[in-house]
Length: 391
Ligand code: GDP
Image (cartoon, rainbow, N blue to C red; front, side, top):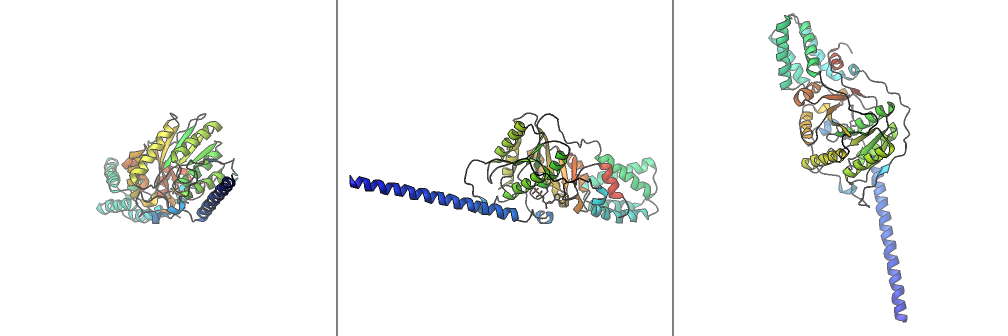
């Protein structure tokens, strides 16, 4: 009897000790996870585009130190109504932000204007200017062929007249596309953002969120790039700044469940718009494209909800952006391009290349890092800005 009693006590003590040890290890795991999150918050923002240019489209996933996930189920956090900044959005002038692209062309334009007539050298210089501005070889030839035809038809003989015809030609090449962002009042609208890491997806979502909230629409942001903690943290900051709700999962959670929950949250709150941030890099390119297709299928479970799939391209990467666009376009039907960082490049011609080579309209351009620095793309304004004189 006594033996049974002693054995019983020993058993109870053993169970208690195991429980305490388990609880302690869970606590320390939680502390470690909190420390990781704090470190991520303090981490510098995404690397500059120049660093990213050399990166392949895909690569290794999140580092091993960031893979502590205590619960297997994604934990969805719905942010309370945010502390929106009373920030007034002043739309920047494209002309002021295209300084680098304008400077590149200005030299050629000045040179051309100083010539008395249109000769072979004129055509050579024009070709060089367009190639350097990253219009691309194919589109440049098409533009020059068209221009030769126009010169013949109009009998233009001065270089001033030639430049005017070039401007008309460029605007016409880009006109006719529908650049509006599809939105239907009274229903849930989903806009998905795709593109490689560092191109400006999260920043673009923040800017669009700010503009849409200012226009009186209620916005839910979905942090479906669950592979990088920093991406969700950054989106969370934007959501607070602009007054949008945020749905995010734990790192490593299924991105599909984040999208699903974000749409559920938007439905139950009667929100107008869900902005979905997606991963830009996974273990392999195939994985990434399959993941994006899966997300698209999840959104499509609500027929008609997916209104836009916007491919974000960094203008400073020039023609590399076109390669990315082809790859993403094959995986998910892209409805429009957002061309970011036009303020930081002399390669403004990429706008023309994207549309003529891919047939996808550039809908928005990013010209800076603040919420106001995202503007609808207008071909006439763009061409006028590129060829305008003065500082
Ligand atoms: P993501 O990895 O695609 O989500 O890229 P991020 O949104 O993190 O942006 C990467 C960097 O590009 C950040 O430092 C942004 O501030 C910057 N960025 C984004 N859009 C623009 C733009 O239009 N102009 C400039 N100058 N910087 C931009």
